[in-house]
Length: 325
Image (cartoon, rainbow, N blue to C red; front, side, top):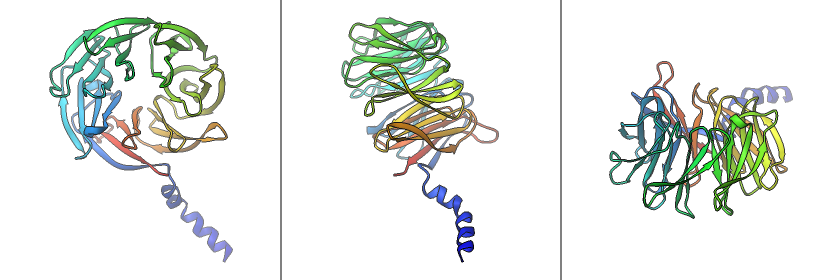
């Protein structure tokens, strides 16, 4: 009888894996006609809209999440990379890597944009809601500070190389910036608009994705060489732990409610890490498609959105993943 139970248990392992998977695929929203690389995403939770920077297609795709389908596709961009939504006004900020411009689209007229010329390769965009400012990484090394009231670039904070992902802390005035060309994590002060610290990454290189876990006072950074997730002390910059991850990572998010981290990789996986004894460990891996390196976790909607580019006979799509308890 015991042997039979063991056999039955082995046969049910796939079922158990599905039942207890930390992420499940809820739906896939097709984006027919969208070709090439897809970059970053932003969500307007109140209006149930997901904004997708379709870099290779030179379009901004707007997804109607309530209806589960594409709402519109806006042209006129030049390799759109970063996208962010201003709370309150609903204005959409789109950074273009091709010509280094920042497009500002009003919520009421998403096809009419004001344009700010920044420089080469405008990339990630972040909103400082407390100070009502917009930060854009661009060029060979700078964060632009944008006044959304006047639509002017009011300051540039210099860096030692092109900035990849960066995060603004909620309780202080710091900005943490991945600068892979300099082999460092730069720490900036938003009040003085100067770099106040440099955290060398040592043998870990190509730091692209980043997430801030302020509950545990950790900065999570994903590296491509080697493929690794590392945690650093927010207070000192000291490396606390590292764990292997999927490769070609580009987006990383903390799910504070479940004490998890989600890492999307171009290798074709989403890695899930869980907090155990004050350190993140690898929990599971969900297969997506090659090139699906960008994603967005919405705490308000409690969903992880993964951008899957067209692959083979499959059209591009947004995968909607639901976290489980």
